[in-house]
Length: 342
Ligand code: SD4
Image (tube, rainbow, N blue to C red; front, side, top):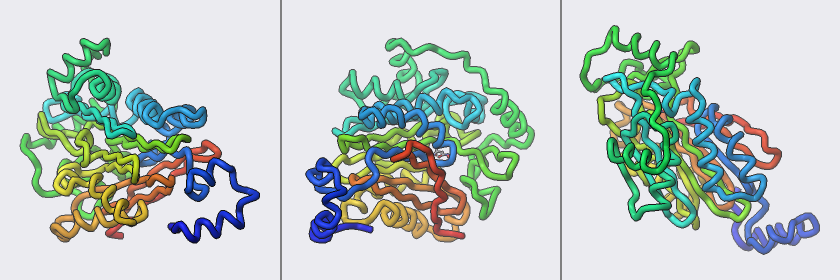
């Protein structure tokens, strides 16, 4: 429920004896603060690392970086160096980070570096630049003390790659292989044993106790992508956008579709115009679907958003998207997203 100023004053008069003074002065109704949300159910790993920072009154920026480090460390998970490789068998990583002052940093097509989000943060904090790619991003990482990893695939990724090679035609796939599926579409990412698709992107958004927002997005990108292909995840305004006056958004799914509408910037602009986080995500999904409703049946995109009041929401093209929220008691709860198609 959105509370306008008048109804807030009425509510706060009733609730005054129970309202913390700082909440009253902050001018917002009691809401989720601090709060951290991450894409998918694997967001539990990310949120568990972010929450201790927020709980101690720390900065949202530090919280989202810890979320990234935790998920990038998890070799069994889906992002970072444990992720699926490109068509040539190399894992290439994309990531970005953005703080409450609209400072941002991003890296793409980065190989053999374990924590791309931390490289992105270093770039943001120590240079005038925003985006580094490929060999230049790796050179910057090494010059700043990041270690060059072996480049060996994780056992799971190796297995999936070998499976993919058996049927692979080395060309971009235009049509989908998993129509109406819960998956991501054209790139036919690896399937899990339960028939669902690998979730190969983690986006995390946090609102800290000071009321500041930050976010990060990290991915190994679509499994078996063309060499050099970069999706939405490291692109500010596509995979991640933070506006500390309004809210923040992140995305997962088929990056090309998100880039075409500058998806997360769009979500934040819808919130600026009064939409709740869920409404804003829904409108952005509709913008994507309406470009070609028939083709939209063939891919997945999910948006996740939080506003300045700590309200959160998500919406996706296909069913199957979910997010993890951690607030209050510090326990991560997985929430399924509503979707355009059922
Ligand atoms: C990409 N958006 O590279 C990423 C992939 C993704 O869950 O989100 N997978 O396009």
